[in-house]
Length: 267
Length: 333
Image (tube, rainbow over all chains, first blue to last red; front, side, top):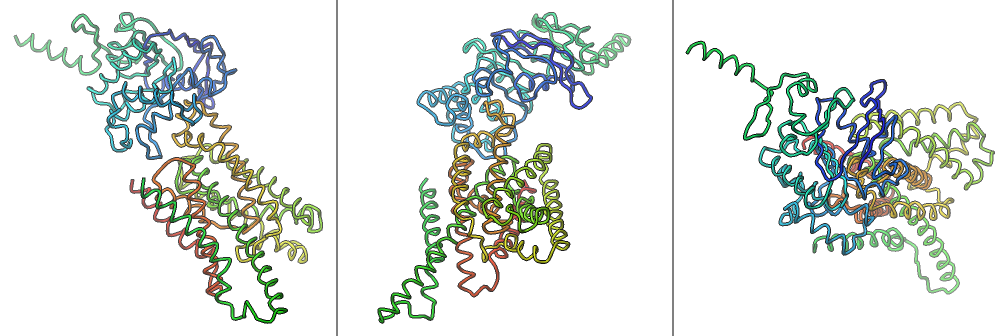
């Protein structure tokens, strides 16, 4: 369980996070949504100690992360930031091997090799393991990074917009894999997402942020509500039902409605 | 893999050849009879040969130390700053050394123990350089890591500023003090300060051991800050330590053979080009070898051609052209 207590973080005078308290439940996919600049990435950064919060405490399985060594944290919690532009040319296999660094300190043992192979197979990149990252597609690259996270073998995984720059097929594939990881490997995953429909379809719990605060959180059914979504994004949403599932439409729906009305008038 | 092996064999052979060339080539070209028949003269000549050889060996040692330190810290510096063009000397580490020496003489006079005693002077200068460089580069590097052009500009301004400051202090100081100051500041490869060699050797070993110990961590750090932190690297701590190592190494190298702007750039990038790897250990070894070759072989050639120019000019010429090429290449991608 990850617990955040009264977290605040500011860049200069600007408070990006304002007294956030939150509990991430185990064995679930939690989606973090909110408008641009709401503080989602900052929250993820603070939890993963990339940023040091100005105030507040974070507990990882009831241990204060301030008292834990960086390497110790890396054995329990992995993070992947959005769009990794690397300065180095590296093969998929080497990248995934880096996932074992917290465990092996760079000297790989038999067990490490086993875990690396396992991660490569799990993410279906084993057959292209010797290809360089700049030779493969965006979807494959994203899978390689997730394979590194799997090799890191942590209980908690934080992903910052993993669907960025993925086409629809790869995005669905990615989310399906994340679901599988929760189910089969017992992971706890937090994902920052922009597409509400993806969040609704694949996550177990949605947390919504606005202006550095948690404004709403709850089950998919509760969160997929016009009033709540309108408030979170300051935007006009339209919730529809498709095959018994709630889907939101956030563009052109007024226009469509007007057009439909006009059609009726004509008829 | 086979070509890899070839690179290693070739480069080590060339390195050894350069050193032997530097040590022994004068024997071939000398007009004197090195092995006279007369036993008394033979003994004298033998002593002379040994004398020259031991002096040359110390010079080679100094060049090797400097080349290794300059190349390996350039490599580490590039990982820390996440770029392939900047090196410590390009942003003014070595200009700072001269300023520090000048200010020591200016503030404490040339007769102070801080200046007269070679060892005390070395440590004082190094300590001062450490403080200044850490302060400056932490302020600048931290926020502008990816802005190479800005860093180059800052480096240029800094090195010009510190050079001007040094020459200003030298102008207003006592002529006699200025005289004694030039012993430390007018160091170059043709005029090495070998008196500190026995302090430079252990310093090099210490810095190298410390760097080699962290090479695996530097591998991870080349993935970028967020990935490295996620993998459990204490990024800020390692970066500070690395900057300390770099400042140490640069002060040793500059005290030994004076400023050499482009050596690190050439050595590290040539090694990268040859090995096409991101791993620091092979890169460190190969770039050190290339650094040694450039310095020793270059100097040997220059001596044998009768000092037509200096190796610094040679390296700057090659290095400058190479750097322009690198910047153009970087801009294209």
